[in-house]
Amino acid sequence: MSKIPFSERLAQQTPLLADGAMGTLLVKYSGFSLDACFDQLNLTHPELVQKAHAEYINAGSEVIETNTFGANRFKLGEFGLASQVRDINQAAAEIAQRAIADSGRDIYIAGAIGPLGVALKPYGRVSREEGRAAFLEQIQVLLDADVDLLIFETFPNHDELMLGIEAARSLDSDIPIVGQATFSVDGVTNTGHAPARVAADLHKTGATVIGVNCGTGPQQLSQILHTMHHAVPDATFSALPNAGFPETVGGRAMYSASAEYFGDYAVTLQHIGATIIGGCCGTTPDHIAAMRKALDDPQRRPMEIQVVDYEREETPITALHPTGLAQRLSNGEFTITVEMTPPRGYDTEKLLTKARLLRDAGANVINVADTPAAKLKMSAWAVSHLVQSQVGIETVLHFPTRGRNILRVQGDLLASHALGLRNLFVTMGDPTKIGDYPEAMDSYDIVPSKLIGVIKHDLNQGRDMAGSSIGMPTNFTVGCALNMGADNLDREIKVLGNKLKGGSDFALGQAMFDPPRLDAFLQRYREIKGEDFKLPVIISIIPLFSLKHALFLHNEVPGISVPNHIFARMEAAGDDAPQEGIRIAIELMEQIRDKVQGAYVIPFFGRYSLAAEVVDAIANPVRA
Image 1 (cartoon, rainbow, N blue to C red):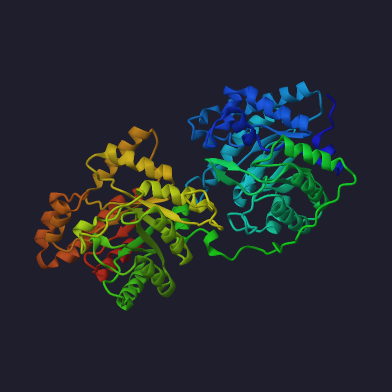
Image 2 (tube, rainbow, N blue to C red):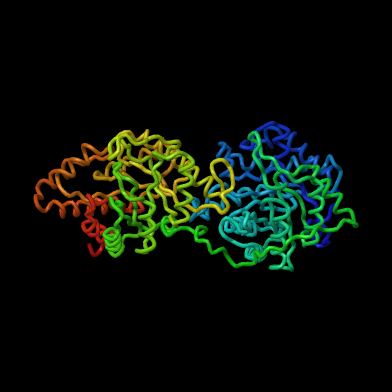
């Protein structure tokens, strides 16, 4: 075949028709669920992938995408296939080449690259360097396989899209690059970037073609494309919309936009400025054939669109930015937090005064407990909101699953987010039988590890547990519980695995009075997992108040072990026991400081002045 280079074809300024959804056809052919690893089919069922390519070529596509949307080490790792990045990407390119050879037509192959499937810092635990390495790994295989262009698509995270394109441009290659963002229903990316900003940034970073794909359908994409074209009129554009907004019917995603409707919008997108036009989720060869017919018809007229004012710099919604705690964790900064218990009544003045004391002593964050020991207390949400708004220090809201069904859980989380409470500590909560109302309902629909997953993978992606849109995504930073001094470390590490899988951003560690136990945890984790423990841990520090307090913790609080030498010190201290407890807390922190990322000070029965002494000593270790 003698096709001209893709960059020369682009310069002709006549529309190039791309293909439609690959997953939609593979589900139809194979009967697999939408949760299957479609990239693996390049190795296990290459004939199905080639059949999909052939149908799109026959429908009139001039550009087909390799079946590699999720073929990076992170996404493949979810299926135990991280080691097969090269094999899967190379096979995909070869399948596309065979389909083109069989057709006898001059068709361009686009190496498809999707999001990594993991959150980059500060939203997640994956560093930019790790993300860049994953992109480079996949890109290099596609380049080696002689694709004609690279297409980055369906990126709701603007920074991740920019990172991917920058990684591609860092290689010694002048291959054309298409960079496509995805926008939420209100016309911004999940990271709060408006279309004009996205277009300008993509143009600067070196994308050959900039555009938009997925979304709610052709109408939304035409409006966004109009704004992007207005912002960067000299750029070359692409648009690949979904076949409307999906509905879940019988466990399957159904799309309502007809092929004829897509034909109308193909001409409309061309009129607005798109050079590459195609389809995304839900589109089929019928949609592409209708688009081909419409683009080839000189009498076909574009539809009128309603111009939407997306031309704003950034969304002002603070939910789209990382919390101060998230930034501290991302930067590796040592973080000091203190637990505060809501009042029994509704007078919060004393509590707010103590919060100011702790802030001034050096606390970075305040943890607000929710009905500790199942005792009636004021709402933790209200206290957190008051502390943040009136004291000016971030909070971590304790969020127990006990006593809430899944409706209330999600409603409470949305309410928390609306109040500006974005840091959560998800826990089971204390059983009601030990508290003020032992007869109170004690059931729950969801365990903490599962709820962490719902928050990170559903709400933070803009949908509820049922898959329905909640509009803007939430931006919670989520912590889990961890006992590094547990008697059964294997069980603790196994439970922790579910919390890590859910997406925990950090852990609040159980109080540690015996530092060698922490070392034993780290060693055992390394033995079981074959890697170092990486989750940031903010370890609990409980300043002992008396010998009786120490004995209570050792004998009655699960997971806490107090060594005999500390009992001896507290007993010998006599009336000076509270100050001895402070000295012990400071010493313990000095011993373990280089192995954790923060201190979580838990005062004895509201003695916040003593906690402030510990905070001050930890915040100023040299002076102490």
